[in-house]
Image (cartoon, rainbow, N blue to C red; front, side, top):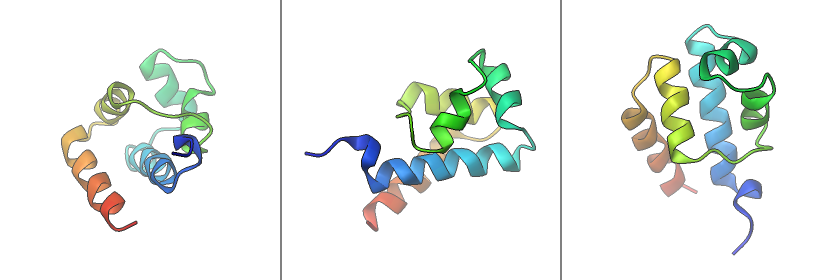
Length: 82
């Protein structure tokens, strides 16, 4: 098994985080601040340089005002197409 950080699935998660943030009208710094994280946290997630666990994904979705459940369902659908 290869490392997940280099997977297509990780690329999809990174892309989705960026889309969620942009739709919420937030900069990466603003979202990081809302989450109480350092300024590079979201940037690293969006660039695929950092793996995002399920709890962090939930917190990101919540901070952006979207349903983590719906986003996860969308991700799983995209994963199945790979």
